[in-house]
Length: 285
Image 1 (cartoon, helix red, strand yellow):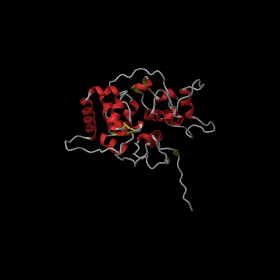
Image 2 (tube, one colour):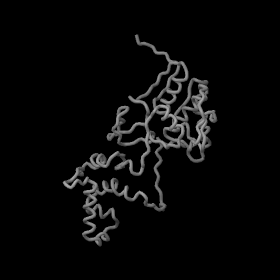
Image 3 (cartoon, helix red, strand yellow):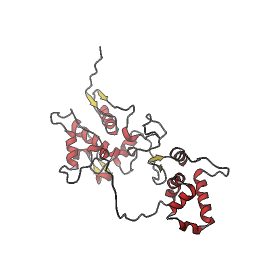
Image 4 (cartoon, rainbow, N blue to C red):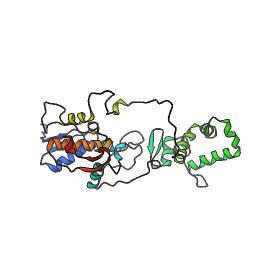
């Protein structure tokens, strides 16, 4: 015979919204709670992707392609309070220099980027102790200083780099050195813009929608009318579009659901930047 399991409450995902919802419920009410998740880890997109595009085991420390949900601003009061409550370590970093991006993948070091995105390059130090970036840069400058007027034979500096080093080495220099040098360059307004809308990751309404963001928040509390309070509710980033995103939106959605469905009381968060100064879950119920 197959054993049967009875639970009072069921959470159907263990992303940041579902995990937060289960965490608050389990500590507030004396009920059995079952958490379902298709992956073998909790946290959803708060984990990084490895080089092959797979999500590593929970608590792995080999992050490469960073997912946005694990980052937040210190003036996002809801996230900061939760991190402090759970004793989660966080730190500030210079986003312009802290990550290296090459061929649509983020890396935490230049050497890692060179060896994995530019596999045809020699990513080792030479006899003078110069790393691969400095070696390429020195060779480029030597060629330039040998005859500075030769630069005018090329359409731009990019074409000159490709003439000296080839395509792959030029892209590596661009991603590792040039972007860190010209971080303060002011790019003029474009004369024409091409856009790509990723429909699978776009939560906001289309133009001329007759439904407001706050109506979506209210609908998510009781999405199916045949269910009553405590029975069914939706929690997640897509259901809190009030100037919030990623982890913050998922947690706020969870707080609103817990306030509405289970009458839990939460403090109001002052100085919450995305709420325009103050966030109270009770205001959305």
